[in-house]
Image (cartoon, rainbow, N blue to C red; front, side, top):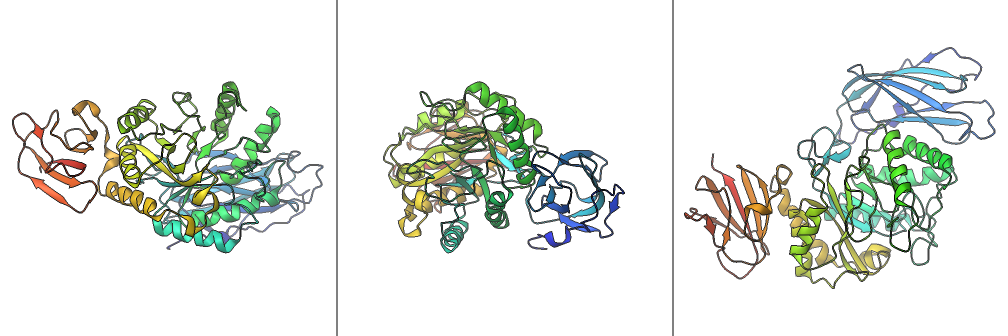
Length: 508
């Protein structure tokens, strides 16, 4: 099945009297795709003063291997509760559902079958400095930052579709979306855009967001929520009890989505002189989200320019870095590597935003190409931007296709395409092995070296047991095979007319 979205099979026989506590079992054996969403809808006619807070829909799932998983559902309006779950094992699943006031009990089964979903976005299971999918499949993140209008009702659906069709054809597999969970109600940001108002809890507003999120999932596009759960200048709960209610509700609805990253808050909760969450609050909220998330989504927080103060916190499972914003590529590489935890992927979120004047230099197309290369050579995931000032301006802000700098997008697309030809996911940065340039290595097997300044390079630990290929970095179709390595293990680029890749692979 090409796009297995079998939601119509999920609905059980419902609507029985709330006073009847006899377990009801579905007679239909539902099928759900691996990493897709199982969902049931349950009517409860009992009257509650506040159905969001007065009762909880609790569930226990039993996996094919016998493991049990505790989770909960959410109120979806009109006396209807829903339960969602993302199965991660092929085979027979069982579930039991009950309301916390014992007003109703349900039991059921479903069969998890293969699907074309690669898995939940996570760390690479074999080399966790890279992003990957749960289940072991690989991914090279190709992310694009967009502004505040994406989820807005007053942005015409025709324009949204045209943008998404372009983004999909351009090869983007992730969108960094400014106003996602919460609207950034600020001038020249989210103000005026009718994005879903998710707090106080209102199921109607959440469904508006999910309609668009479902389209992204079907297009196999992942999402980074720039503002996160607790966004700057947005309407979010400040009371700790309400914060937990909000988090639990968000996880019940969005936790079973394979294509979302989690972010405590942004932009820059700890921005100097403009802090809206203290570091203690960020740590408390991050720890709470981690503890409540049964799906173990990647979780981090948006950092201001500089080092990642949360790099080594136990609740973070990936890093988010703003900068360095520079055309000094040695500095770019050094700071990215310094902030890259050895067992967590790194998202270079605000590190190459063309046209952004908030600390970014004026990038030429050549700078965009070379910076994109060095970011990936630093084992970081690139989030590109196309702006005319702030993050909410230019093409990233208005998403009007005629305003894009197509040559920029084509340039980063070509860089990503090249790295897709290399088993990058097996490699780690190894600057210690070379005397200049940038190196990714699977030591003893393969080495990819980017030489921005074309001069002879010395490589440690290499001998004549390696195939040698030179690849012209500004014309990736031009490849030159070298014959041998001299006694000093020193290699010279074919000419000094451009930058080069040097690719060494162990002879079989």
